[in-house]
Image (cartoon, rainbow, N blue to C red; front, side):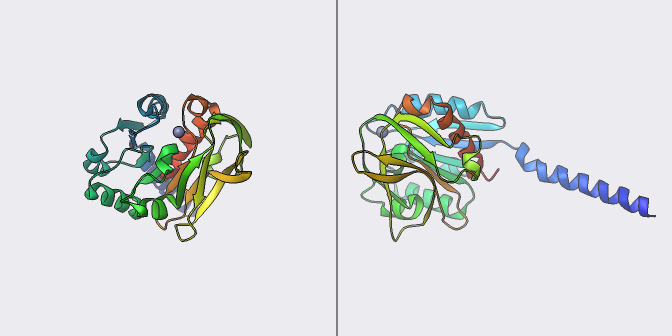
Length: 239
Ligand SMILES: [Zn+2]
């Protein structure tokens, strides 16, 4: 009798394991949005990052600079990766992004220019989704990124410190905005101050991450950035 019970419970465990694995087998859809000024968006996000993401097992990433075309795509998007400083001109698009982020149905990644204070008509983007933003940066130069939360899944296999050559963003959290958890910091020689470089935004239900790095090859082509981006996609998708 005991043996039968053991066999039955093992069978039940096997079925549960298959069920738990099942969602991971489905496609992870990433929508990368670029476009705007001061950056080669199509090259660094539309080609280099996109190729990296599409090489991940199960990931299907697409890229657009048509910022007002994304609303219908959100229904099948698991991770929305915003790097654009090109405006979302339609209020319906801005509302759809807010709803997408707030509901936690999919994750959101803010890459580099995507965490700038770009929107005169959308303060909520910075205060709620980004938890703050950047209004300035140091000129492109080599600097060190220091991981401060090494056990966070976004930092898996990322070195404790690593070098990039990039614009050092002066991202500042908003005191009344959504709180952030800092995962890595940078130290600005011009400001003589530390700034968050990699962080997550603690909006209930949502999965939002910020990666301040990414002006050009000086980050996108480094192993640390590439590992970080892959980890962030999986974390934002809840995988
Ligand atoms: Zn830049």
